[in-house]
Image (cartoon, rainbow, N blue to C red; front, side, top):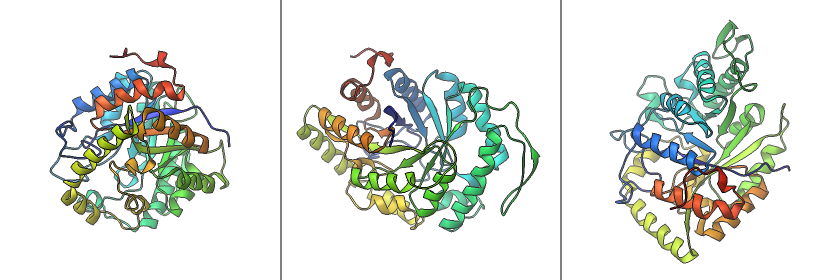
Length: 357
């Protein structure tokens, strides 16, 4: 397998901290101002991407603030110059024609740095309370497959006529089309069999939830072997990082976050009740005690700077190109990672616009 150069991204704090909601070092803040500051600094530090998760209401506790994804992505596109902006999308919330037009506009604002992250929804209240309804797992993927097939053609500048199970689009073309490349990139999340079929057919990059390297390698082997049109599929991994001078210091920091996360047990119980039990991500996340979302520390990026760098290189050798990272406290740990780990994985520090403290 040909492995592309390493890239690193940061999850935008669209619904506050990723590890624990009762951390005195990371007060809850899902504001636009906080998200803007984090993404602008991530770009300056040399990070390559940011992922803006999509929720209309907070998935942990509905009375907490929640950033809106697509308006924020457009604003960040205008405020940055290099970092890739990946906006998550749940197909039931937008008609494919409308979403494709929005995607092309943000692609043009960013001058070719925009990407879509297709997720087929796991949080029931967002759809049920809106009267949209929450379809069965496999039905959501069937809907998402038809949806992304239309979006992909529309953002490629095609004139589209399509009549399917869910959509009837007639002689539709969007202008201007992409001014910088054939179309924005398409990332796909999900690890169920329908998700794997979808990404093999329509994705450019498969986002895998944090888990041990052997499991990740098996997932990559399965999907990479599937027939597809176009270039080979690329792979990304979500992971929560705790990096310190020594393994012992990192373990102490990990135990601190685990203890704080235990205080979120009532919140997690609500989240589990609201989650489709067929979602593989949630099944995977129950296997190992961890902090962080989307697998979090289960990927094993906890340890000394050398340990974390070595494990990143091992994942890279297995096929992971993009590491979409979580930290807490976000700002300080994001800077620490850039300063201490980037050099150990061969990252060119001349890309960083912020001098070391």
